[in-house]
Length: 193
Figure 1 (cartoon, rainbow, N blue to C red):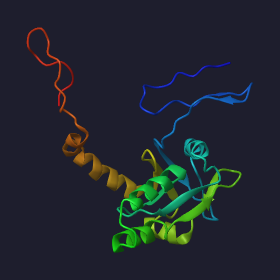
Figure 2: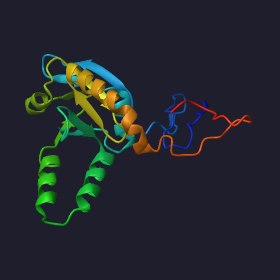
Figure 3: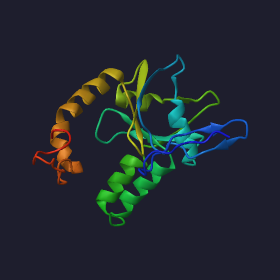
């Protein structure tokens, strides 16, 4: 049997399958990487295999929860983990409050469940394609617990703006907040900040 080495204890492992015995080891449990796929004449697009594998492990193998992104000209998609995350966010708001109703409407009211066919494709409805400006190609972008679908040129513009903001965002994740070890001469070890 082939063994799998897991990554550091970050919650992310590496998928492996022993096909001779039909055993699957712990797999990647996050949507990661970026893929660009073409939409066919019928409006179908192939969902990247690594994303389908995450959906299957997430307990939602047959489709994708998909809705217009609230913050970008893109589509948000995911499985049960995404649905639970939305539930958790809404649970923190008072019942029957306008804010909860508005967010529920924006998230659940706009959700479309996209069925994955036997070839790994989904049909992207016209309303969703229109929101994201998607015509011939779709960029699938992993964002951890969810992924987004973008029109390629819009995605490149958004990614360029996001990269420009990265130095300012480092402090949000604590970059540079830990004391750094010093060398015997009193200098600081490691990469520059």
